[in-house]
Length: 93
Length: 317
Image 1 (cartoon, rainbow over the protein chains, first blue to last red):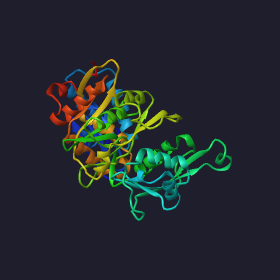
Image 2: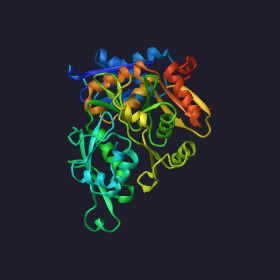
Image 3: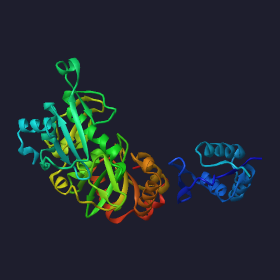
Image 4: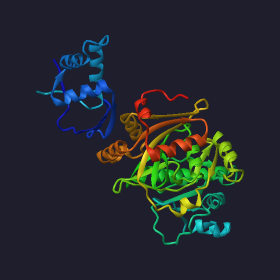
């Protein structure tokens, strides 16, 4: 199972307010707006390498059972998008 | 003053040593042998100081006649900045716009001492307000209304945030008004307040409001930023104010900053502190006087609890 991480050579600078965030990627020089869901995902991955299942479990816990339809697919899409933007990579552990 | 020169003397200087237009943050030495450029300078910059010939300018720009047959037939003018730049020739009748665009290009691509917001900036009570906005949102019209209602013009187009001092720096230039906003401001200020209209430009009809004399005289006086306000003219909304969620305000400002990615982490930190320290608001209005009241109140008093609590709601009347 793939685990995702923020690469160690990549400094992320954060601005968080009201659950939303803007993150600056030092490797690309670009900034990205993160809504509350994506913000939570990236913060969780930044703490430690996580699999999609880890993330799903973490978010489901926060939602207290109010999980949207096709949530696992949506998490997979977001992980792909974060990887495309260079914010996360598959972990090489 | 530049207007002390006759048109002929001005054209002679433009052909030889050039003439320096000092807008505060930026001094631009302009060269040209196109009479319409001299006319534009007299019309828009006549009240600017006549700088010494040995003044050190930040940029040198040229406005040359079009080549080939265009020297004689349907004359053109084209800007140059000493390096390849994306200028296509314009009809000479809209030479004033070529002058402004060439100067804008220099500011947007080279003034990297500053973080360059795509915004109007004005000051009152020692506090600067930043008014970002895409084309068509009413930014320049509101800027012109404020600049002629007791606010000091810093810029209609580029907000220059000094990364070292944390202050906004003036770059005082004419305000570019387009299409419907020309009639609105002529009705407000009277005939003769604006330049001649330039028709069939890439932005439609354009006219310039010369920078007020006080703004020119005080063009070196910086001011601390006090608020960021995204203006939105809407014919059906009389008055609406909402806080703009700060993360969204930040990413919008980042997206509009000309040199944000080039300045990198320093720009992010500056922008983050900037947004975090000041009210960030959206306003909608259908009368300029209402907008002026709202801007003044936000700058002086900040946002109300209700305006912050309703940040996520649509702007409605």
